[in-house]
Image 1: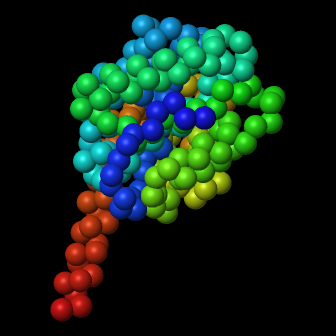
Image 2: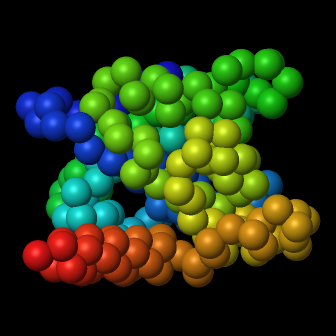
Length: 209
């Protein structure tokens, strides 16, 4: 489902950074559901990290499982209000999202949108011209990494949010990932990687002359 879609006249095909929400952009307490927009709390580095990624040319798209709706902890309207407040607060701090897509279903409903199912990314691809081959997914759960693997997206696993507990629970598959402490560290790693790629291209061109 769509919680927010930015009206953007830029029709160029660009890579995206797909971002988990809870534990990646905002604080997440394991075992608790965010049900009140007033209790939304960003990590202190979130704005800086998103502005860095946007400056590198990536579209910023949030994809989030919100099973609290399906479990009855909050209404669909309350979930939408939380996402709208998040988007507005980010915009006020200079971090512009291109879209927010969420799955409201419970884990046993068999939907096609609950991560690691690919539905949210496929839905986003209908609304944005995306270069998935150069896109990233950043999140704090194994389901994020499995989704990225299924769609062959580049990925970064975070220790924030559920990250550390997930590393203990699934040490095998997660220790094979690129692991960073938080979103800002991930954004800086992506920046460094982009610089290295540009240098390689530049060196190849100079050798051909």
